[in-house]
Structures are given as C-alpha cells and as structure tokens.
Length: 329
Image 1: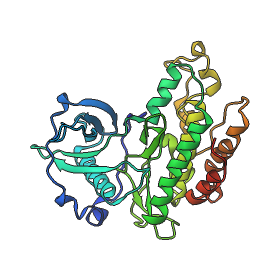
Image 2: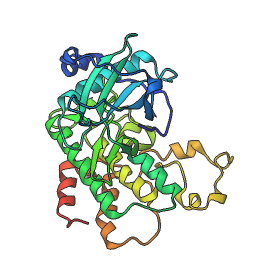
Image 3: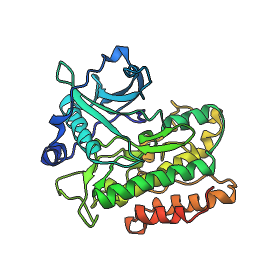
C-alpha cells in the first residue's frame, strides 16, 4: 500500500505478544508464490512491497480472485528482522479477525531463503491513491456519499477491533484504507504495528508497548508520550475524512496556497518542515468554502474526532451510531 513518508520508527514489544497472537501460524499451508519480478507491484510501505498475484483458473476452468502478496522490501530503513516480526505479527492478527471491513487473510509462508510473505485478498485500490488521482483530475473533494461510506466502514471495523478484539489498529491513514469498486466495499489493512488494549480500553495492555503509527496522523497523546487508548485510532480516522475533504496529507501543506500550483514550490526554502511537525497532534483547518448540507454531519464528525483532548473524541461505537442515524446520502 502506498506510503507517504519514509522514516525509521521504534518497534513495540512484539516478542511478548507473538505467542498468543501467532500460535497457529505454523499450521498455515505452504503456498508457492512466484518471484517479485513476475508479479505486478501494487504499492509499498515502510519496509514492505505489495504485489498482485493473479491465480490460475480452477480445474473446471472458472476464474479465481487475485491475491495481494506483502513481502519485505530489500532496501528498507527498518531492519529485515523487525519487518519480519511485524509481518508475522500482522499475519497472526488477520488470521484471527473476521469482519467485512477488514482485509481478509489468505495465507502466510516463507520463500526458500526464509523471507516471509503475507497473502491477503486483493483490495484493488487504496484511498491515498484515489486522492492522488482526484488531484490529477482536478475533481476537488469527494462526494459526501463516498466520505460517508468510508466513515461508516472504518468505524464499523474499529468498533469490532476495539470492543470485541481489544485491539488498537495503530496506523489509520488513507494509505491503509482499501477501496473495492466504486466504493462498493471499504476495508482496513496493515496491522503490523497494532497494539493490544486493556479490556476497558483505558490504555495499552502491555505497559512496555509503544505507539508507532505515522507522525502526521498521530494524536497529541502519542506525540507527548501520554497514555494511549482507543481514541488514538479515532483521531487518525478523523484525519482520513479530512484527507477526503482537502485532498492533502495532514499538516504538511497550506491548503490555500496548494490550490495555486504556481505559488507552491516543493523545493522552496519558505517551507518550514519543523514548523509543520509542530502541528502534529492538532486539528488541521478545514477549507473555507461552502459545503452542501449533506456534508455538515461529516464536518462535525471530523471536528469532534480530531479534538486534542482524547476524552472529547467519540468512541467508534458512538460515532457509528451517529452516522447510521443519518439518512443515506
């Protein structure tokens, strides 16, 4: 899945949790996947690449759906050992979770050199790439019905993860949201840095675990090393909806100047990266333009989900309940 930053991050304590999450991984059947040069590359992330594997027809000649194969990227800023642990950790999670808005697990194995790969259902496109395409086509913000569909889908997945699995996704962003068809289905992916939550969701189950995430989508409590709860996912979720409104990466561009291509220079000395990073964890401004009434509940949801105070953010359950009370857009 396309990533928007390349950075080196610490890793949470995978070894303590791997036994409970991956105790059945050894039972996964061996699946022979062709070498990377024979596969179509779908995207990439920190330390990994994702490829499309077109499967051969069944014995009766009928077609079979393609798979997405996640493999280690050789030239990664994160060590191969760390990325292997994350991939095995993610495989263990996906094998245990079952939800229509979470990417489906298909298998986990290792190649002849011992390098692991994770096989999942193919999500076709990710939201970040759709945002990029929308920019190139000068289409402006997404229709309210599409934002609503993404919001309901992600909150449904988060409600399941938080309340039933006691699991924090830990890296919600547009690149980790898969879209099938014309928003016919929306699914969360990339669980490599997920964290176990306490039963009451008041913090992380293991006090030694650390939130990793992606800086631009990280909440204030993560930036300031305060206790992490389920509300960390809610903040990042709010920014995903913000991305669909602004077509920007949070905190990295001034949306007013970015609308004028001639006024923005990627290499301009005026761009202050340090000042941009100081905004991480805050609520970025919404565009000053007139939105139709169908956008109002979505704008309100973005505002409440991106509050710096986690206590003022809604739970996934409450946010979903509010959205489902709205007539279909």
